[in-house]
Image 1: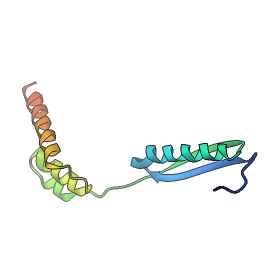
Image 2: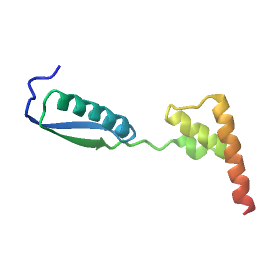
Image 3: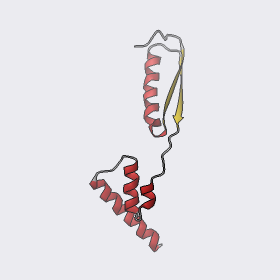
Length: 103
């Protein structure tokens, strides 16, 4: 699987988006364990996070209600929850809005 790494000092670098840092680090730790098992003397893991920028979403600015804003946000991220979860989130959102407005 690996070239001869017996006694080697290995540097394992990876780049990933900020939202993928934890899964990438977990994968790097698996590789580290395999390299150590293959005989590497030491492994240094280095992570580089790639900054991601999102464009402003005009639909989000145009939305007047909080549920409409949430829908626009989810669509912009291509991450729309199923209807059941949306309902639960909107209920919680309504509860928070009423607590804020009464307090």
